[in-house]
Length: 66
Image (cartoon, rainbow, N blue to C red; front, side, top):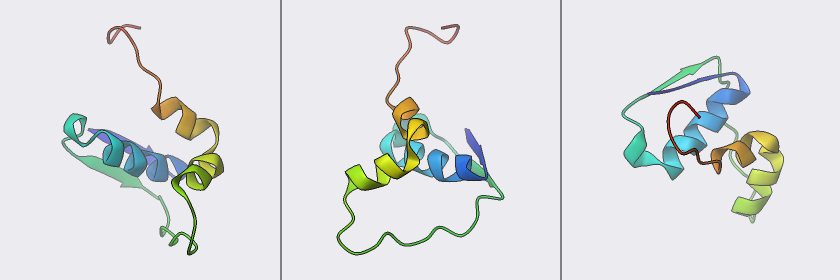
């Protein structure tokens, strides 16, 4: 399960999209209405807009404790 609050709701949706095999369900709390990306917006621009939150999605860990 992935839970996201506020901007974390947007991050959790992105995480679930990238790692669908790891997410059985999502809980979005006060995530706001997603705005459509402007025409011609690249995936890189969206990641840049999310900043460090998007960078954390790429992190991997050796085990659950880590």
